[in-house]
Image 1: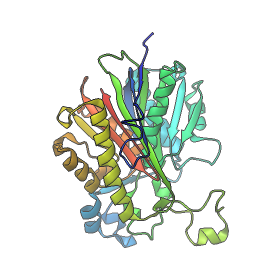
Image 2: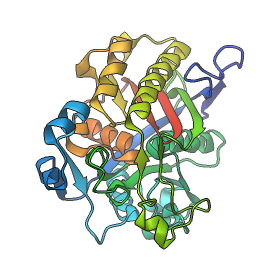
Image 3: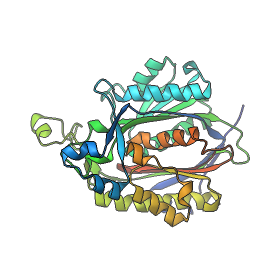
Image 4: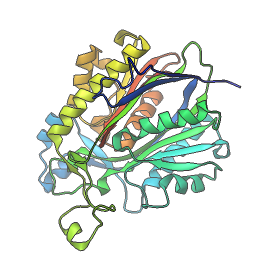
Length: 352
């Protein structure tokens, strides 16, 4: 049996890392992404389509880089998108649902408050496996991937399916012309399996962390703090609220810091990176990270222009599309990073 190589960074140097001082660094070499999958709804919503809502197409492109996004139909829920992505991933891996022994769904738009979307998906797939959701917003897939890798490292899973799926169109107020155009719907999936740990294969290094605050990015209504009363609904408490400027500044800092920390901890140069896949939130954040690391633009995968910000689906959706386009070759070093509400982030260096 393949035995993953588990490494935890010494607290004196790398834990916590400099990404705000609230990260944890580690390595789970010997755990690989065996296959990927994705799904987006058929309906395309262009910037021009949003003009009737008062959204400025030129502003959207200049400030974010987004040209269009996808929107789920009225009959689709988060688990439906997740199911399509899961099936795509399992078919690409030639793995049966019956072989899945762990299922994690990262989402902030679950079908229901309970049961979990993962449990609904587990039942629909027909796999016999523990299943649970992770709520870490746009960092959800990265946190889910590291969590699944821990199960594999402990020997309690060999085929772990991690899915990021969100219907962000259900969370945004159409009258919020600065926030509504940013988000779209989609799902992405990855199958994790053990592999030979040497020479440093799989999840070479990871950094996850958080700065707990609800102020710059939250959905205030609907939880135990503020249940959805008629008054709360009338005032829009069920919609996402975002302080775009402060979130932007935070994201630029945490992306730069966490990417740098992971590379330095792994003793890897930015020149050695074949591809960078970041959470598709804003093209200016992505460009700032490349400038900091001195990585050429052609080595960063971008699908933000087509899909907008799909929250937990963002990283796995981009990862799968990069994979299907032949941008990932065996042995490539790839940087992944997700960041968002929490405030939370997760960054990893993997060997494909």
